[in-house]
Image (cartoon, rainbow, N blue to C red):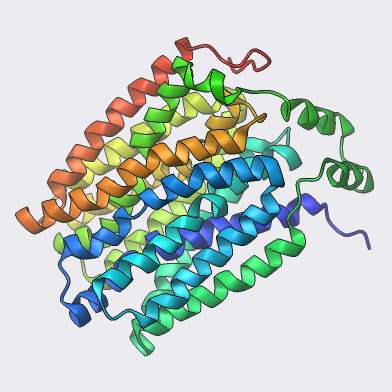
Length: 412
C-alpha cells in the first residue's frame, strides 16, 4: 500500500506545533488565572505581565527566521518546541512572581519558530498551488488548540491542580518535538521524489522552485512602503491575540456569564476560527490574501464592538460569533500575506522582522487590558481602543497596494 504524500505528515506537524503552542499559552491562559491569583494573590496586571513578555518573541523571531533561511526549518522547529516544553515543565515549580515571568519568557522565546515561521516556510513549498487552503487547514490548528487546551486545562485543574496541567502541557510539547525532528523537511529533492512517487503534478513542483527564488532582499524590504504598510497593519492586528483573546474568558465572566458558559463561548470561537481559516484561505487563492485580510480585520472590529455594547448573553454570543470568524481567518492570513506581498526568497527573515514588530503590541496589549480592568473593573474601554486600532490596520492594508512589490512577484 502506497504511503500518503509526505507533505501531509509535515502539514500535520505544523498544524500541531502552531495549534498547541497557541492553545496552551493563549487560549488556556484564562483557565489558570483564578488558581494562580488565589494561590499567590497577584493582581490582573501582575498576572497579565507574563503575556507582555511576548516581546521576547520579538528578540528571538529575527534570529530564528534568519536561522530557518540558513540552516532549515527542521532544526529551528526542534529547538523552538524544546524551549516551549521547558517553559511549561518549569511552571509547576513557581513560588514567586519573577519565576512566573521567567518561565513565560522561555515559552515566548520559542514561539516564532513553532508557529508562523514553520507554517510560512513549509506550506508554500509542499503545496504551491493550494497554499491558501492548506495554510487555512494548518493554521486551524490554532483553533484545535483553542478548542481542546482550555478544556484539558480546566479538567486537570478540577481533578488535580494547576501544576499538573502545566506538567501535562510540557510533556505534550516534548513528544511533539521528537516527532517533528523525524518528520519535518524542506528538501527540494525530497519534495520532487514525493511528487513523483505520489503522481502529483510536476508543474506544481516547478512553481515551488521558482517561488523559492522570488521576493525582497532585506535591504529592499526596509525601503519599501508596501513592506512597512503591511508590517504595521499586522503589528496592530495581533492585538487580537494578547489584548483580547487571553482576556476574553475573564471579560465574559465579568459580564455575567458563568465559567462553564464562558468556556463554551471560547470553544465556539475556536470552531468559528476553523471555518474562517478554511474559507478565507481558499478565498485568498482567488481574491489575494491582502483583500481577504481586510475582510478578516473588519469582522474582528465589528465583533469586538458588539461585545463592548452587549447587555445580554445573546448579544455577547453574537459578538463572539462575529469576532471568531474574523479572528480565525487572521491566523492563516498572516503568513499568506507575507508570502504574497514579499515573496519566499527570504521569507524566514521577513517573518522574523514581522515577529519583532508585533512583539510591541503583544507586550503592551495585556498590560493595557490589565491596567484598564484594575482601574475600571471592566475590559470594555481596552477592547474599544483595540477595535479602533483594527480600523487603522484595515486602512494600512488597503493603501499597501500602492507600494512596489518585489519585481518577480505579481500579486495583483
